[in-house]
Every structure is written in C-alpha cells, then in structure tokens.
Length: 595
Image 1 (cartoon, helix red, strand yellow):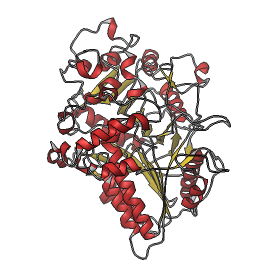
Image 2 (cartoon, one colour; image 1 turned 45 degrees about the vertical axis):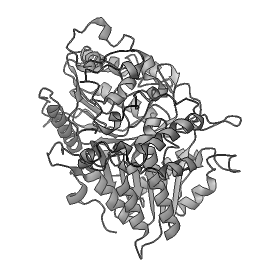
Image 3 (cartoon, one colour; image 1 turned 90 degrees about the horizontal axis):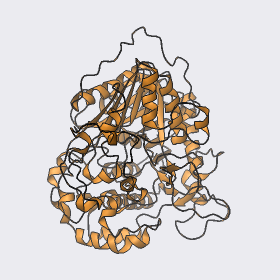
Image 4 (cartoon, helix red, strand yellow; image 1 turned 135 degrees about the horizontal axis):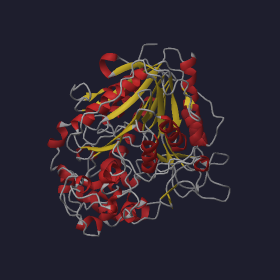
C-alpha cells in the first residue's frame, strides 16, 4: 500500500512519541487532565476555543476522592498555591460579539485576579471572521492533550450517553448528551512542537515573552505515564498538521495541511472511510469523496458518516446547516450513481424500556479512520472555514499493514467508537459496514426497527424543508463558511443574493415546530444576536472583547460590553471568580456549539 502522509503536502512536523492514544468523551479526558495537572512541576500551557472558570473536572464520585478543588479556576489557583515554581498560561480565542451572551464576562480579569503566576490572554490575531479553534494542553514539556474538547461547560458526558444522567449538568442544569474525542501524547519532541505553536501565538497576541525552564537533562515528570482510561494506539511516531492562514509558528502563509491530508487519505481508501464530525459542509472534502467514488478500476467503498441530527439553532442552520444538506445530497446522489455504499447516521442516548430519548447525542468529535491503517484526530471540523481560515491542529498516524500492532489498535478504536454509538460494546466488524449498520438503524421518525439498538438512526438530511430552501438559495454563496480568506471580501454584502428573504421566512415559520427540544426560535435574540440587520452577516462581527458596543437589543438588559474582557477598571471584588456571572445570559437554549 502507498503511504498516505506526505511530508511535503500535509505535515507541519513528524515526531516520535512514547505513548499515544485516545480519551473518548469528557468523562475520560477531564479526570485525566486533572490527574496530570496535579503532578505538574514546571508549567501548564492551555490553548482553547473556550474556557469556563467553574466547569467541574471531576464527577460521578471522583470528587470525593480528592481534597483539592474540582472546578477549573479554583483548581489551577490551588496548583499555583502549593507549587511556587509552577507557571500556568491560558490562551483563549478572543470571541466574536455573536457569542457574547454565551461566554463569561470579564473573563481575563477573573482568571488573572487569581494568582500572579496564572496568565490569561485573549488571542485576536486570526483573520477576519475566523476563530482560533485549536484545543491542546502541554504539561511540563512532556505530556500533551489534543483534540475537540475544551475545558468548558456543556461538554461533559460518559460513554454510556444515558438519556438522563444526574452528573451531566452545568451550573445545576442538565444539558444534552455529548460525544467527543481527545488524544493524549507522551514525548518531549511532540510537546516541544506544540509549545512552539503556543508561544508563537502568545507573542502574536501581544503577550509578554514566555520564559520556560530548560528541560535538557531534567528529570521527567511522567516517566511511566499511562492514562487511567482511554484507548491506547500502538504508534511510535505522530504527524501534526495545521490549518492556519498565518502559519504559526513557522510563518508559512495559508497552511491547509489538514484539508490536504483528508483529501489524500480519502483518495487512498480501498475498503472504507469512517468519519465523525460536528459539521460536514466542506465542498472540497465532499468533492474528494465523489472523485474517489467515480475513480475507474477502484474497489467499492463503505463510507460511514456519524453526524449531528440537525442544526440546533437558527444561527447554526444558516451558517452550516443548509451547506451540509447540500453536501449530503450530492454524496447520496454520487453513491447511488456509482454503487458505493454511503451510510449517514446520528445517534440517540441510551434509553430504558419505557423511556423516550429527549434529544440526539451531540457529535462534537473530529476524526477519520481509513482502512484501519490511518487515523487522524484533532480540532478541525469538515467545514470550509475549519479547513481554510480558522486555526486548527490534528494528530495523525498510519501504517502500511492493517494487520500489524498499529493497524490492530486503530481497528480497536474504530470498533469501540461504532460500538459506543450502537450501544454494543462487543462490536467488531470490517466488511459490509454500511449494510450492517443500515440493518440496525431505525428511521429518523416512527417506531424503532424491531430488534435494533435504540441508539442509531438514519440521518434524514436533506429533508423536505431543506430541499425547498436549496431551490431558492445557494448556501455556499453565504459569507458564514468561507473556503478561503479571499472569499471573505468577495462575499461581503452577498447575503441577499439567491433568496435570503425566502430562507428567513422559512426558518421563522417552521423552526418553532421542527425544533425537537421545544424551544421557540421565533426571536432572533434567542441565538444571542440580532440578525435583523444584514450587516451582521455581510460585515465583520465586531469582537465583543474589544468593541465598545452596547448590546441593548441583543441581551435584553441594555448592558454595554465596553471592552469588557480587557477593561482597565480596578479589579474589584465583583470581578472575582466567586461572583455571580449572570447565568441567564449563558443558558443552554442560546448555545450554538459552533465549535
């Protein structure tokens, strides 16, 4: 078999690793982060799309086994108090105004007030309308975590994904079942590479230079590390790939290494492609799958896509929902034309005999496996923006022999993930994946297929509503999911091209009935932003952390966010982490989860 990973096309760096594996769902990742951070002696580097100071890292009885705090900020402060040599650096995306009602206010003051060795910085150096979406942690230059999980609210769940779980709460309120994947990587070289990205972004964001201790000859903190949970992968080398228009840390412009890696892996597929992604709106990835389906003389494929049931908010539907519907329609047509097998699914939480699922499990993971010989996992969704203008980081491994130790461990990962979605821990199948899963899956509406798991469902998209909208509007012409940085200016003002009025009327007339959670979407402010002004979509979304903009119309309270997160005001007691943070502005109903 030809190699997939090409150092010239989609490799920022390739490094040896001492240990590599996956932590599936926050119930495996959060306690592992807690355990590892508790042992840190030198420094912690945390980069993310979102951080919440009060997210509980230990749940389900684990909290009773420790004496230290279990919420993020208090825990980090405790580490600084007990270790006078420890330095902690947190680098967070300087989020857009559209997310203001879903985030902690005065967050930089809240974090930096805690301890002078805990440093927090917002990073606004992304290109216009992009986001910093990399999610990784480096501990003492030896151990790293990387993937789709942020340390924030509404992310925790365990692999059972029970319909009702008393531990799946944020601020005392239950939230949706949630699935994600995070990699762990032990090795100084891979940690050094991620540290280079972190320190370069920190410098670009205006932070003071970071002086980290020299580890040459230093006694290791984690010489015999093994996670308490997780799924090990028998890799001794890992490739890191980026999306980054600025190319940190090398400065190479317009890095699309993750996109190119996906395309080459898809083209190399001989038996099957297994994908989990929060969104699938990428034209170029869809075209790559269609191109492989139409390649003459190549064997037929099983293509399995695990997606979310539907866009959860109007904002999400406009930004990526319609684009995904168009992409899935094209893939279904190509599969029917060529004879390849395409299975598109979503999953429900585990239900008791007399229980009905209240909502689908939210798929937030970003992972692809090809032929049990290639695996990539990271922060990049299969959207145009994730593969072009946002900053992303993926870790990948491959073998030329699916029967060797690495290939067998990749197969165990795939079987474990599919088994989780089925509710079948014994699942282990390679051939005829789509036919087998289709036989188990139930339709999206109506009674469960007799004898099937209550978990797996056939994905309905494109629905009749989506097809009707696609008749009057081309979602790829909207400015929300650009495929390249230059598309931002090109699409400026294009919001009304192709029938936005029809889109708007249709969404408002149908979403209140269609939304399975029962939440009315007839008020644009429910999504945390007023969309009545076309400028909200055709122009840059002003950054809430720097804008002196009053959110009178958006937040119903008339509160001005005048440079809220970077205010030069005195650090009064009201900005401390123990104060009330107006939880009403961060309800689950307004979450977009566009992460």
